[in-house]
Length: 438
Image (tube, rainbow, N blue to C red; front, side, top):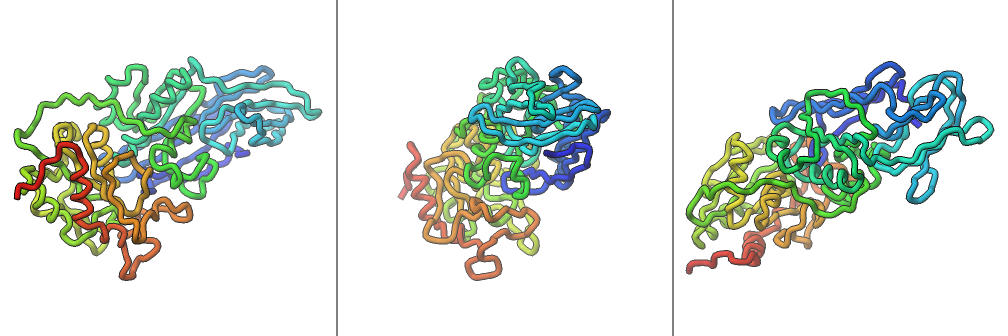
């Protein structure tokens, strides 16, 4: 049981791989205050502050001054002078998950578990007599789901589950997410009320849930470790939904920007652990694709990135389409590309959502960590899959994340041992790919 009078500081992450938002989640729930809950995101100009002010008073009146809702766990307000025992039961299993005593202090009290649970909350007096109860049922009630405006891949991975939750629970859904994403998708989700992050709305609602990869110590904020279910599966579990791959509803009707056959690639990511580290591997593959008659466009945002002492640049033999271009422009190219080659990063998610074949060069994540693709390339004969190790947690603050072999000859070997031959063999499995000209 969490006494919400106390100010508790939590750390959110804004990336699929654990990047800190750069600030804290403050829970300061008192009887006459509107609490602010949500991540304050760091200095990247793509990001904004995602803070939700929960209702001052729980929305459901159980009588006798007792009120309850399910905003960030179940919240119970017990009037002064009433001593009770609160019991939280999972309706599906009929198992008691949490219980605690409340002396009539007139304060808000919240459950430790913050993810979706179909709660039955019972209030008993000192003698054990049931004096009030409520079964979770959000049909036709207002529910808020927050998709923090962090990494591109995170947003694209998590947004579809807002719609799945709405359909499954038949609720009136408000989704808080990045304004750029709202502009791109709102017309395709007419049943969702979108609010941009940064407006800090004071939302009245029956329930509220946050989509995120939570730090290891926040065990009660997720039903299972994200390493076991991947980017989409972990949030599906958090919202009580089947962990099935889901795409964003994009409108894909841009005119073809290039007459010739072309391929899009993305070679940059937020840490060298995600990069393809085979020496000159990209240029070797690019030369072969050019020989087959493809133009090769590198569509990363950044031409060069610095990781501590390491400086990485996009491959010299690709056509440079880098820069702070609108995502709609990148999508116009992706919709008409023969296929995409990328890494476990946001542009790969964008390409998959544009419904083209995606060749993913991946070493530190395992199959199922991202979206399904039959053209995933991993060398399983060497160290791999550290992101899926539940004993580890990806640290975006370090210049190179290689928890098992950092500083040794085996550092980031997971992608150093993926050869151009392996990548080209994955490309050759794509239907309709152009053959070698010689």
